[in-house]
Length: 114
Length: 115
Image (cartoon, rainbow over all chains, first blue to last red):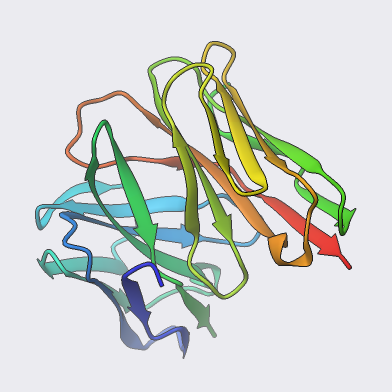
């Protein structure tokens, strides 16, 4: 257990659906991240929230909408997705550990868009 | 090197073999190199963080070295066991004064240890 949980673990949705992914961290960290992993590609950073403020948005399409209501919770709202959005979505959190930030990951949500 | 690259992409070894794989990263503005171990259906788990040239870290049968001048890190596993089967990820971070850690990941090395 890393102290970062994600729900649901698996999600199948149609292109017209709206759904949300949830991430919760119990580590007292002050930064949270969304990553996407597609087959045979490296983890791609999507969004970063630091102290509940969005500080990074890596050219992610607007059909992905993040929300960070407090330092322990992070959501990724999904609407009108495309089949190519099918991937594993990982959440992570971090805080400063001396000279660097160590990220702790959740187990991911496997998303399939039909 | 502009991206983080790992080799080989996959590796099959027999139980008891020792093995190693490589992570190459941009050496300019380097700050830290992270290794993670990722078992199927679980969370990636941090193994090591290294920041200084010549750093060596060890955890049980797994060790790692760092060369920041030439931009590479090696991960070694001595006497591989089936439970070592996982994807091993490396990620680098660069100096930049942010209030969070921005990591650039390699695509991983998939290790399968056969009994």
